[in-house]
Length: 204
Image (cartoon, rainbow, N blue to C red; front, side, top):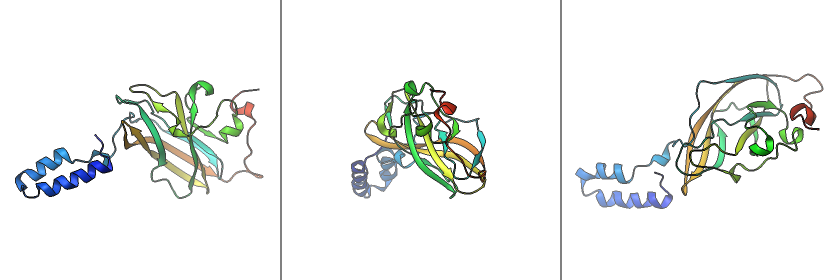
């Protein structure tokens, strides 16, 4: 159960009324005013036992697919935002976008490099991540990609994200694992260049 701001205010009033009943205060507040919204509440299954590793170049656009968006709850879930957790300062997020699985012809990019919209203009048409809802106990018809750059060479670990969502009129959040290890080097001169669309999407 999640509490809105109104619910929290109501709990504060209840706490004042119960202050005169010390024997009951702890028990009643624990049941009536507990705050599970303060911590994560998993509606998407947490994925474990996997990792991705790849060589990349400094300032190259890196596209990481967000895994595990199958909705395990009994209500629709709409994403609000996705944030990298404890990412190194050299990691600069460019955007987080959703792509329609039917239009793309596949369900995830996993880990790629390049400007997806420029290189796959027909298949990968970006939409805001709140433009779809995951149906109850089903896989979504969309996948989500986090695009970012790394501004200096080195080895970088990006282990998890925070997913903020809305379900049944309440906001919630949870973690999801990425388990990325990126080995970043300076690019060969004159630097990285976008690939033609046929090299990425195999489209004429």
